[in-house]
Image 1 (cartoon, rainbow, N blue to C red):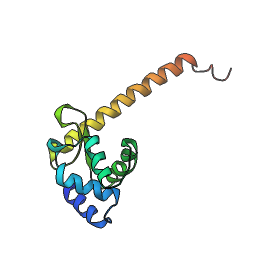
Image 2: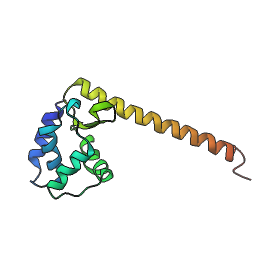
Image 3: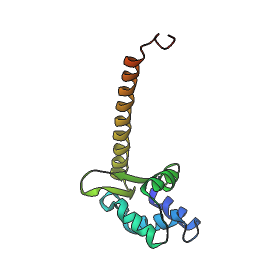
Image 4: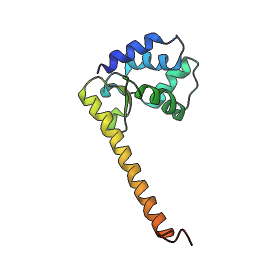
Length: 130
């Protein structure tokens, strides 16, 4: 899957000034590959320069979520010097993004398991009806 080419095509389809286009243009110029990952602060500064005000949570719930539903994948990582967001360019980038998400899912699964145990302690099976 040509992640970078998909980002180029999508950017060309969007109007100038659109938040997703501004982000994709920035990432195509500066954040292709995990070695060029950009921090949220750098991304937010670029958005601000283009009169787009967006919190990290808004970015994650809109642009990031939207692009990940299609063929554009903005990867992310929180390890080492390469912390930040990047466009996947090669297999190594894809595996970095995949491992980051798998680790987050595993942490949430551990939280869910803990909650399930606490529910069982507080409300043992059969005790709910009483």
